[in-house]
Amino acid sequence: MDDMLQTGDKNLALELGALLRDYRASDVLVMDLRGQNTWTDFFVIATVTSSAQVQGLHKHIKDFAGEKDLEILRRQRKVPKDEEWSLIDLGNIVVHLMTQRARSFYELERLWSDAEQITMKSEQ
Image (cartoon, rainbow, N blue to C red; front, side):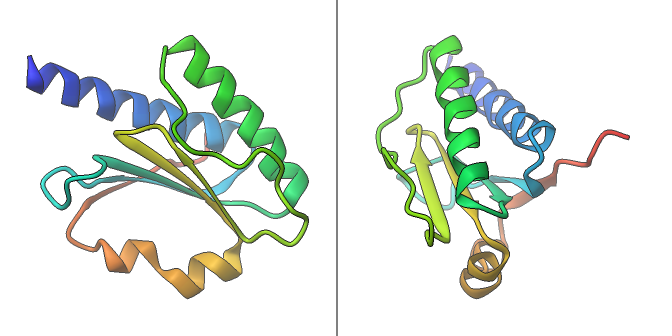
């Protein structure tokens, strides 16, 4: 049963990655952190260009969570205009919406370099 839950979480993380990609976030990456920590299983990381884009993506993620019966544990209600990193905590999946500057500075991909990384390619 536990394997089914983890497979389900991975599928949800990949669906979230595809959703972000489809709504024009760039460099979308899904990281499998199972076995690397105790507080989450997946990161979904995406680069954003504006607070308006972040607000739109927040709405799409909220809608997705509602459709999949996922609880949003932590998210910002209003994104400040100068915000460079927005986090949405869905428990086993944590979504990071970051500007290019923040993403380059924090280097989550390098920090968690032992994790499996799945790049969500643009569909063209």
